[in-house]
Image (cartoon, rainbow, N blue to C red; front, side, top):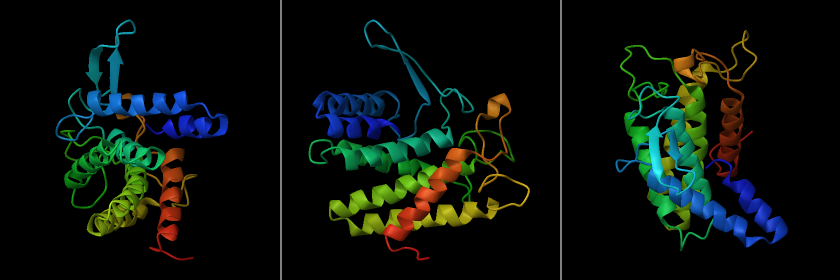
Length: 222
């Protein structure tokens, strides 16, 4: 979902409409097969290479098959919100609803301190955080707020902006530690493999993107 913009941009540069059709098809398939009815998500779906049927739905980097891996949920918020910008909203309006549903799950399942655990369903009493999930979700929420404005929903736009800003504020307590090479610490790449409590370059990237969105939306100044 995060890479569909490449297909759309390639279509613009080449005039090859098939690339847009491929991106739309991919997003539709993802919404059907990876997003659960309650708005949570699987990490991966494995398909039969011959007939395209779903063979297995799993959450490889999360706690368990039916758990909700927080960074995966954030990717979904961002990816479907971005798809709203890339595709014609009048014919693909379900992308907006999918992003809303995934945002609702993410925001309602955050702990009181606003710092995402690596998986929303981990039974650990003190789970590793994933600040990259926070920055990706925040960047996606800013995009979602713009989509809400485009359908004359100022209340929704304001809500997502406020939630995105809060995510950044809550998680930037892990920022700029002098002993770290990253902007943010306390990210978790792959907990079950032991990759936790580290900096992640994509967490930093989306932190900067979210900050740029705040400037563009008039929510911050520098």
